[in-house]
Length: 181
Image (cartoon, rainbow, N blue to C red; front, side, top):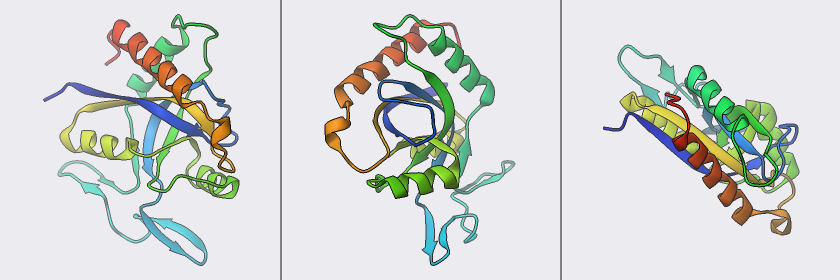
C-alpha cells in the first residue's frame, strides 16, 4: 500500500488560465469533465442526475469533483516555484484539472469546459487516479507540464517532447525536495 501517489504528465491549458506551453500546473482538484448528461440546456454532471461516483462510509458522496489536500498542494507548489530549473523557470500555478475522454478540439468546447469547472488544465486520466486514491485513502499529487493550449486543434503548435521533459524535471524536484506529504 503506497503512502502517496505522484502522477506526472502533460496537459492542455485552458483559456484564461495564465498558463502557456512549457509552464507547470499542480492540481488542487480533479474533475470528471464529461461524466453526466448533455441536454438542450447544456451539460449536467453526475450530481444533477443523482449518480455519485464514490460514496464511502464516513465520507461524503463524490460526484464529478475530487478535491486534493490543500496543504499538500501548497507545499508542492512552493517547492516547484522555488526549484532550480534548466533554462527559464516556468510559471507554476495550481488549480482545477478537468479529465475528459474526448479532448477539446475546438476553442468553443475548451471555453465551455473552462467555464463549467473553472479549470486551468485538461487531461485524460487524472480524475480516475484521484478517484482511486480517495477510495483507498491515499494522498494524491498531480503535476502536468503544458504541452498545448485548448483551442482550435493545431498540432503544429504543440510541444509534447518539451512538456514531457518539463514534467520529468518537476517530478525530480519534488522527489529530491523536502518531505511535502
